[in-house]
Length: 420
Image 1 (cartoon, one colour):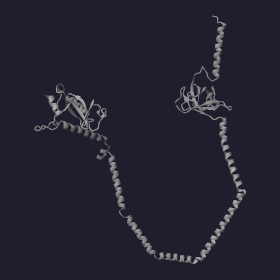
Image 2 (cartoon, rainbow, N blue to C red):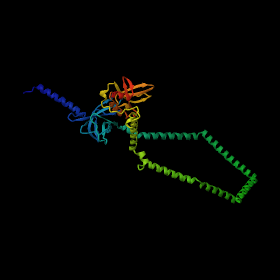
Image 3 (cartoon, rainbow, N blue to C red):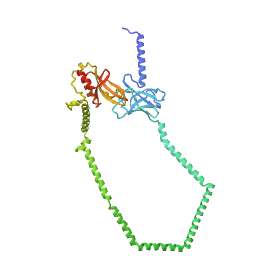
Image 4 (cartoon, helix red, strand yellow):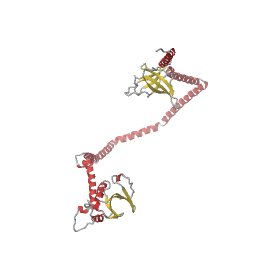
């Protein structure tokens, strides 16, 4: 098959355009035939970084800059997108730092890897940083010298000012007046010394008398040194008497009491005695609580069913609740309803209280300033008894009450009527 020259020309143009696009992309650092990963970095400024700038690690090129755009939201920050060969995996907390590639100021991105074991995925944002350029580094080196030079010039200016002040006419006059004042002070000291010497000469007799009196006092003390020593010995004996009083027994008793208290606390913290078991054995506490609950249920059952525990043939106790009501539900023709009275309280309780959990629908009756709460609606006493056993867990004083045609009925009478 013969291909026309126009077809060949079209194929040549397509190949040329493709080669041109690939060549331009390659010059920009992008190779269509090599897979890459894209990452982002945020900077306040880029300082000469441009698209197709190199991305290096340890001086080796591993990618290039794809695009530089402003961050949305008018924050002024720049988002740099760069591509890296997918052979390289960048650890998390690594740093993408803009550095100078040469002395001419060409900028590139240097990846500084961290020691993390987890890696970024394509599309993640890596923390960015900027290395100072040559101008900034020179400024940082020169700035301390500049500051020291300014301080030196300020010091020299102050010294020159001081010298100027000292050697002017007013300063010389002030110095002369100062020396004159010093001379007057020395003259006054000399005059005071002369007056003191004159005073000592005039009062020489009185001073001698004072010295003689002091000598007399010293002799008197010397003559009575024995009595003074006796007084000191008496004070020492009195001090010894005070020290030998009941202070030591009190301290001894206090130490013994402290030791006994320590022993008592040790026994209370130990499991080797009755008191320690009472304080530390949780099982004993739980058993006591269970025993109290069982006694409460027993007292309620004794109150409701006295003939179960006490039998008197000559006395009718008037309350017989314990019966065998196996077939009462089928023989209940008196419209008698049994309910479980849970509690009566002056304070209103919510019907969804956790205390009513597992007891079915709860009815509330208000009378004489009190609120009564009932559960269940049974025609059989046996069913009411089963609910009463469940109610004992939260309401130890719960009882069964009977209703007929909406009116309360004595429990023993209701049971007799059901037997009939």
